[in-house]
Length: 129
Image (tube, rainbow, N blue to C red):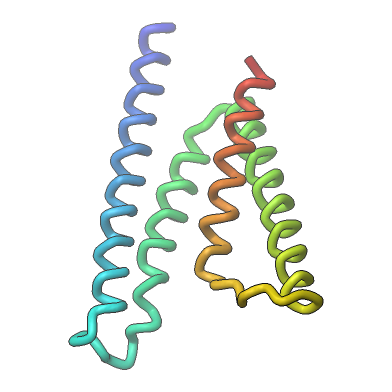
């Protein structure tokens, strides 16, 4: 039984990493197509949604395969990431209003949220070990 569980977890990790690498490559390709001057068609603004939808699908599939403890760890990490990024973006927005701060590029908000999610994941995995 233990050998089967280990093999399933290794397969799960391999699929998740392969999916995330493929999504990153897709995001790079979409970024190139979005900012390349020859590609000026009407639906260009939809291109950034493609890697986001792919990442969402991969994470939803991965979440369904997790056990209860892994789900709790990821849920708490996502809550930490959402709350922390909301705090950072709100504080920066207030600094823009009241100070002489440059405008925030909202494309970075997803990167901030993902970074805080990763930090929350590291903290929660340490907490549950």
